[in-house]
Image (cartoon, rainbow, N blue to C red; front, side, top):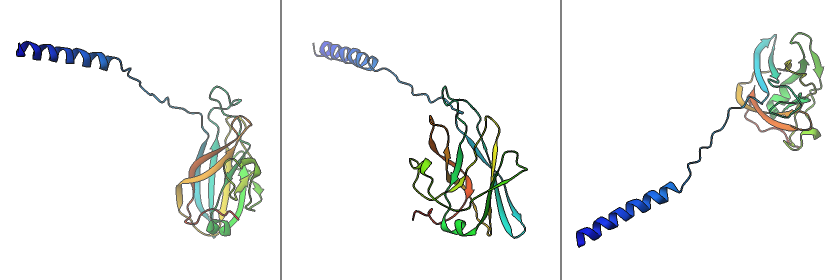
Length: 180
């Protein structure tokens, strides 16, 4: 009798376990790769005379109206700089072809159009992208800085995408961005 009871109990336990385990649904969270982000590449970091010239290329790999995984044109690109880099900033420019350059103000200030991203002072490159064509940005400093592979920048796009934080290979500094 004891043997029969033990065998019945074990069978019931196995059946109950199988029933309980089969009631759990296996959920597979699969993240699909996405290409709907702007690309910022450090094109060059050169010594020019006594200065140090940094050039970046910003591209929109999937231009559109901001719907269905497309990206709106970039309105402008903002980069915060620490006090050391800000003090060493000699000039800033943008180009739509990488050849002809247009100067921008090197005054560091808050950009009200990106206040949802940051309230820090930024260097504003007031030129964006048009379709899939890249835009080039250049900043020249009077001293050398290391490359920071995770520098923070802010891209302002259309009304659907607004302001977004982007990490890029930028000017490496130890000090935090100004916020006075």
